[in-house]
Length: 356
Image (cartoon, rainbow, N blue to C red; front, top):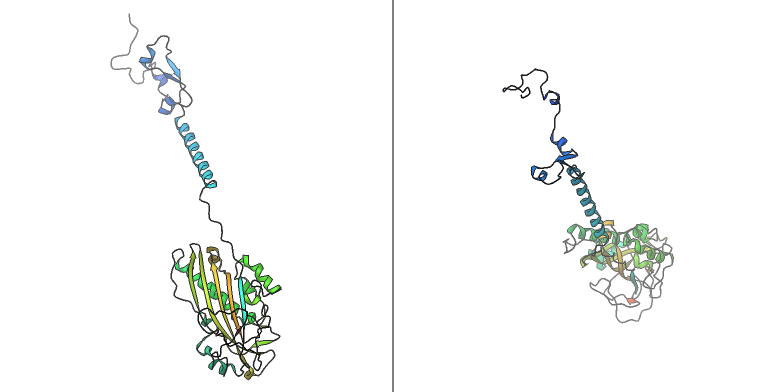
């Protein structure tokens, strides 16, 4: 006899005692199955002798997503460590910054032939080679700006304008010219040159390194003063790319000052004093960023001035009516373009008219 079975059409709904009623509330979703500790062997696996019906799942098999996350974290950590290591041991190190050269300078006096002419500044300028010169900063003109192989047009412009700024502050500022503070000039220098600059003003020496007049133009206020007339200026600025990391600007200008004796009030006793200044500036990318210069060379011709005068601290002009004896047959023209070969002292050329 067989036991009671379910009718062919199944157990009627709502009839108590159904075989599956007590399991209807249990739901075996996929995550539950994957998390199970026991897993049934396949039919093939159960054919072996003494094969158990089920096997335990390894922890890694039950945590596939977690395992992938751990592997991913390890890979990221390894990549980061490798990047740090390669950064520290990178064979292509950044180039060392170029050393800043100290200034090399020369100041050569030009003595007059005969007596220094005097008169009103307007008359003196009208009769001199400076008659057509521009006045003040207008005479420090910029060339056409073009980019170089390693520097953009804006960087070339920055080098030129910074060089012009130095020229104007060091040769045209009335306070600097009359022996006043020089801080505005100092701040334009690369910090590596500021110590040399300070030494040149604390203890000026004509040694090619520490002459204050190699850095700028100034007169001793106890000896001379500026007449009431603007400085006449003429010259050029040129720029070249010296190295892939360096720009070089050359400045060549003639400055003509109307001066007179200190405390002199009469305007008809002025005289002209000419300074030919050739300077060479160097700029690396840090200098361009910080609006500063490296002044590497300065050559000055200045007169009328006695050859024996010590011009390391101040320029020492001869004023109207003064003279010195000169027997040299060859003169030096500070207005002539190009390089002027002079050693220790020169004589103003006969063709150089400093007054009527």
